[in-house]
Length: 224
Length: 148
Length: 241
Image 1 (cartoon, helix red, strand yellow):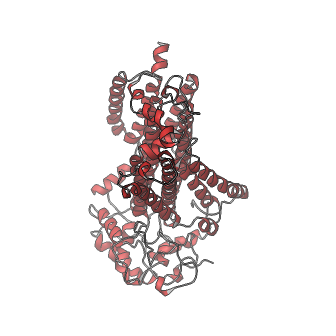
Image 2 (image 1 turned 30 degrees about the vertical axis):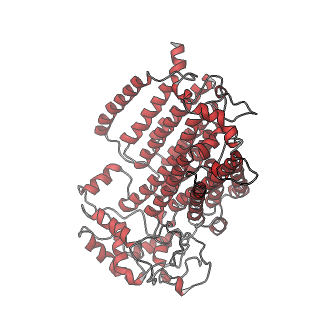
Image 3 (image 1 turned 45 degrees about the horizontal axis):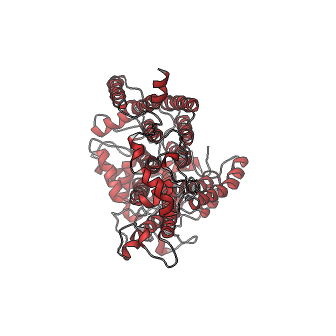
C-alpha cells in the first residue's frame, strides 16, 4: 500500500488539483474566478509533465564537464515544453483579463449569468449608473467633427441595450476606433446617438456632464 | 483605485526604486547566462519586465513612464520577434534550412560555435519579445480609462 | 526528489488552490494564486526542473499576479456572483466522471521516477548526449529551446507577441499605445488626433503596424482637473499642471 502510494501519489495529487481547477472553471459564476480556475488547472498540467520527466538518481539537465551519459540527467524535453507553455499561459491570462475588463466596461458586472442573460436579451438592459466613467482624457482628446459617432460609442459604454443592442454598441465602438471621445460641445449628440444605435432601449445614463463631475470629484492622485 | 503612480509609503517607494534596476540587471544576466545555467530568454525577459513594471507600480508616473515609455513594449516585442525571424532566415541565404544556424560558415569558427552564437541571438530575441509582450499587456490593463 | 517534501508541497498546493477559489475577496484570491504558483515553482525545483522553476516563479508568482491585480482594480474587487445550485448539480457529476476517467487512464502510466519509462527512452537521450558537442551548450534545456526545437520556440514567441497585441486591440483606444517615441511637450497643430484626415477612421491603431501613428499621443496618465475646459483638439495631453 505504501509502495503503491509512493509510486503513484503524483497522479493522485495532480488529479485533485485538476478537479479543483475544473470546478473553478465550470462552477464559479464570477469570471475572474474562472480565470483563476484556469490557472490552477494549467499549473496542475505543468506539474504532471515535470514529474513525468523525473528519473531515479538523475539531476538537473545541465551537463557537468563532459559527462554526457543520459542516465545522469532528467529528461529535458518536458522542461522545454512546459517552459514555453507557462509563458504562453500568461499570454492567455493577459488576453482573458483584457476581455474581462472590456466586458466589465460594457456590462458593469463580471457575473457570468447576468452577462449571458443580458446578451440573450432576457434582462432589462437599463441598469443603475455605470460604475465606470469615461476618463477625462477621452474628452480631452475629443474630436468635434465626430460627435455623432463617438456619442454612439460612449452610449455603448454607458449601457448595454436590447438584445441586439449589446452587440450594437460594442460593434460601433470597435468600428468607430475612437471611444468615448465626445467633446464638450457634442454632448447633445450623446444620448441621441446612443438611442438611435441601441434600438431605443433606454438612454445613456449620464451625459458627458455627469462624467465630468465624477472626474472632478476623483481629482488627480486620488489613489486609495 | 489606481494601479500605477506614486505609492503613498516612502519605504515602499525607496525600496522599489532601489530594487528595480537590480531586478532588470538580474534579468539581463539570466538571458546572457542561459547557456550555462538555468534561465534564458523567457525567464530573463520576464525579469526585465518585472524591473520595468515595479517603478510603474510605485514611483510617480512622470518618472516611471520616462524610464520605460509606453512605446517600449510594442517596439521591443516586434524587434525581438523580428530578430528571431532574421536569425532563422540567415541560414536560408546559404542554402540551408530555416533556423539551421550551424550551416552558416563563419571563418575560423566551428559549426558548434556558430550554433552557440545562434542560440545566444535567439535567446536575446526571445527575451526582447517576452519583455515587450509582458510590458504591453500590463500597460494595456492599466490604461487610465479603466479606473474611474 | 524528497518524497516527504513533495507531499507537503502538494498539500499546500491543494490548500491554496481551494482557498483561491473560495475566498470572496478577489485580491486575496489572487494572492493565494500567486502563492500556489510559488509552491509549484518550489516543487519544480525539487524535481530538478530548474529552468521551469525559474520561469514559474517569475511569471506565475510575479507577473500573473500583477496582471490579475491590474484587472481587478479596473473592475470589481468583490466576487459577489451568487452561487448557482443548479449549475453545481450539473458540474459535480461531470467532475467526478472526469476524475474517474483520469484515474482509470493513470493506471497505464509508469511509476514515478521509473528510468525505463517510454518517455525517457526517446529522443531526449540523443539531445543529452549530443548537446555539448553540437552546440557547446551545457544547459540542455537552452540548446533544446533555441537550437534543436527553435521552430517550436519561434511559434511560442509569436503567440506571446500576438497575445499582447490582441490584448491591446481589445482594450486600447486609437493611439493610446504608441509604437514609436512621441514628440514631447508643446502643442502641435499637425499632431492633433481630431483633425487628422489621413488616418482612416475605422482602423484602430494598436501598435501592430510598426509606423508612428500621426495622431498617437502618449495619453495623460493622471486625471487633469481642468480637462473639461480644454476639451478641444490640439491640446497636448502631456501638459499637466
